[in-house]
Image 1 (cartoon, rainbow, N blue to C red):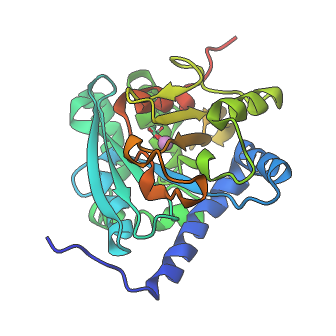
Image 2: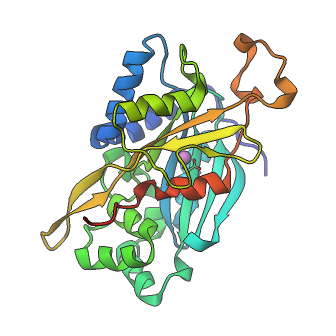
Length: 298
Ligand code: OOG
Ligand code: NI
């Protein structure tokens, strides 16, 4: 279809919505707050550039990726590549922003129809209420602004059943449309040298718990997209029956996009986001997903 181009006056509203989605994330994710504090202290001259925002969804008719994407597409975000994760029963799409300074958006969904009938029934019992999923699909994202899940508080039994089969599905059940992670654009940190590796060193020195799945740095085969992430914060979640259990919530990611070979001769001050490696890498993402895996019980 015709590319939607949001008029410039809409960019203010988009900024407000992005801030609104980030507000509960900064408030409820101590690690994210601590990372921002550290970066402000280390790079006082730099503003925080976000590479992307990521959301998770239940891939149910009327919900799923589309229920997150439609809001962003209305503001001029463009659909880009699909990534698939057959083993995890996940797929994802990413969207490029109308302005290169704004974060990309990465949205994934669990292929609910590939889960067991028992897990499907649990998911349906939360998303399949009276007017849902049509209303959830259309307005579910509003819950990410409020910072609460869009369905009734789950039972521990339902959560545990999903967690057995898909850690991802269990995460969505308790976190809903809450921002899964925000990603710091390491290449936009003014005053920082040494790239992602040096930043990781700083984070580890400060004792941030990092995702070590497949190694600390996840690198694309072309070597131009480097990613790392913290392990998710755990929150004490009060289930419908009154029991409280620790569940994974959100985490922070770091991405460094290196300059494409055809722009290697540009002066550092002339390099813009469009000269850098774009997109995502399924093999990297597969490991980043593990940031919400709970550590094995002691
Ligand atoms: C998304 C994991 C993938 C990336 O940047 O490749 C990802 C998730 O944990 O929901 O964030
Ligand atoms: Ni990410």
